[in-house]
Length: 210
Image (cartoon, rainbow, N blue to C red; front, side):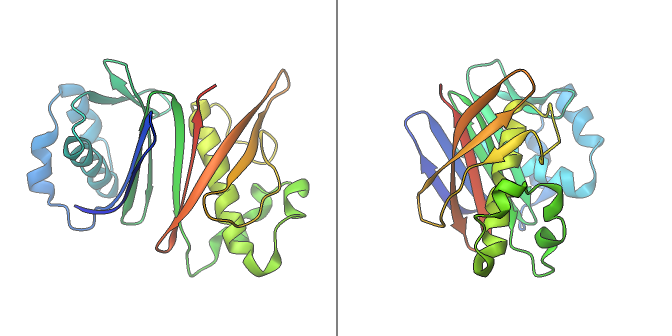
């Protein structure tokens, strides 16, 4: 396992690693419970590799709790005590572990520019106005990552990225904090998102510490 990035807050640990060289035969030894084994066997070959890679990384950083998934496939630890969020993009896997609810996303800057082709599905009119045309792909990846992180933070309750999640104007600046919102009919809640570029990927995370 090749660690690309690892950083800690007082209450949160995030690790990004490359899983392209993981040995499936060795990693299968990390699956202990019958429930985990059943879930593992239901996955595609690609997801199996990701599943095993996550468990290898957790063992590497000293996390020994059982990792399970709810009906929305949101991961959680048993017994409870810490929160976890996962993201995969091609050969990279990102794991966030926190004392608070957390959402994380990692996305690759793809050569086919797919993010531009689908921007109408997740970019609001009030978001499009602050996107600099010379850095459109960067802005789109960060905004998508923020909304994906909000979606995970909320537990997969709404996949309407256009109407239920909003990102406030921001500039591309290292270690900047970006305001964002979950917007529902009955309430709205503000969060702070953080991002960093790791090689040709964008990592975004949001911690609900309020």
